[in-house]
Length: 130
Length: 130
DNA sequence: GATAAGGCTTCCAGTCACTGGAAGGTCAAG
DNA sequence: CTTGACCTTCCAGTGACTGGAAGCCTTATC
Image (tube, rainbow over all chains, first blue to last red; front, side, top):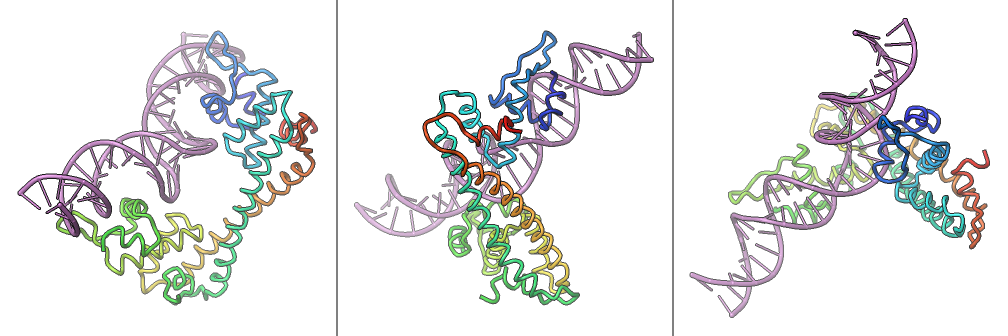
């Protein structure tokens, strides 16, 4: 398979696949013409990467997960630990965002949103009321 | 005030303040020795920026908000529009994260996390079960 | 007056995970 | 044989900083 075939089938853009090769996540073969040549196994790995990235794992986490995926003697505990750490990061981020959301939705609710200059949002940001 | 004073009082690192000058968000004066010299007004703006950033506004949104903050003839509707757009982005991000969280916490729950290689997390990522 | 510590300056490079674009080689169809 | 769609590499840019180097300025102490 050429890169655009594997791109279509994996759902990843060609650019991203080249990038993944650059940083050593995959090693496609090369044809006589210099074109990358992908096997079904390469496709599998790329799909794995796309799915892991979609779950928010960082590239380095993906690298670790991929190594475990390939390692038949792995302990599932190692996978679970990575996943749990990531889950904790997601939870942290969600609660940060929810905190922002709480503050901001309150402010938006308080703002008249008309043609007058008075604005509780700006007042809050400027600290005028604190 | 020198940069470290205004840094301490605004809560922003000196590096960040220099960066904000670089991109034109603030224009501190300069002393005869070339040092930046900050007034209370500059401090106020920096605090505004710090708070807006803490609410997740992008630098460009901050720039727009700061312009409105300084404009006494503003319409609060303009502020509210920016805030509502940002709020929508936050909501999008939260639901993306919640979706990731849902999937991942399910997988983590299903994984034994022992020394055996069988792992539903990897199976899901690899697409073996789909 | 010399010196040392600390603060200030600028500039360059790196982060993360791509993404866009330019310049040029290759391939299949008509 | 040309056209157009591929493919290649390399360079630069994104956002919002952050780290570090090299060098000037200030303040305190000896």
